[in-house]
Length: 351
Image (cartoon, rainbow, N blue to C red; front, top):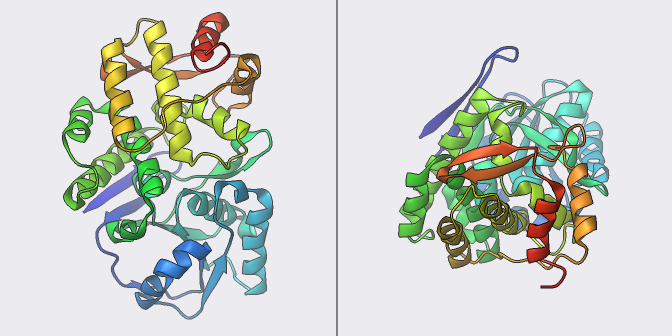
């Protein structure tokens, strides 16, 4: 299956997202594969067996969100310089969302920009992170605050790579699937409720629907000036959780799962969502092994961290919330601080 990305003016960029078994890849230029030790030990031989190129370098970087930093990107760049790569060379991001984000960012920087492709190996990266050209790194102020919109030349999604994924990593990807269903497609949400999300056929359908939804959004709004911001549902809260815990306690999807529950609690507080619908989302997340609770130690500090998020603007916090029913959304930047803090208190002080 092929899902096209077609970005209109001013970029006029087109590329394909291919969902299928990985086919042979022939390149007439130098190629560097950026990966981590875990993916390398499991799948690098498979990728190399399907590749032809005049020169192939492998750049291995540490595994984990805590290594998603400028210093790690510099290691990627140094590897390219040492191998004497030029502007016609190609990077391949071979791993999860962290690998994809850093490889894309390095590609945007090296000699002012070289091509890269995505071959995602986690469910989270296959359904979300590899699609749309968001690249970047974290710093002590927050998540993905340094980066660029830089589109790949292609995305190759092979569900086979998920067969070695640990259960916790697989569940992390489910959170992003649920996010998109709650925001855009109530029928898809019902499908997720009614099926075993570990079955092979269901996994393929999850990927297909999620990628199609994401591609539709990106085609409308590449640089997040409108509807693409809706994909940050659950992330406004989740990014604070990741920052507070040093990007080491929770996987990204786990933090998003908790963030979705917090966003839904705010939607219920505002009368935008019925409690029964919030419970449906909670149950789906819990039934697929995701955390849904977080102990906020300091509500004031947690609230202040919202303002470090990229989605805040002119001193206003932008919240993405379900609206009326699952499959519908609203973007709000006018919510009184006391009402937000009252919801945060449900997860923290006094609980």
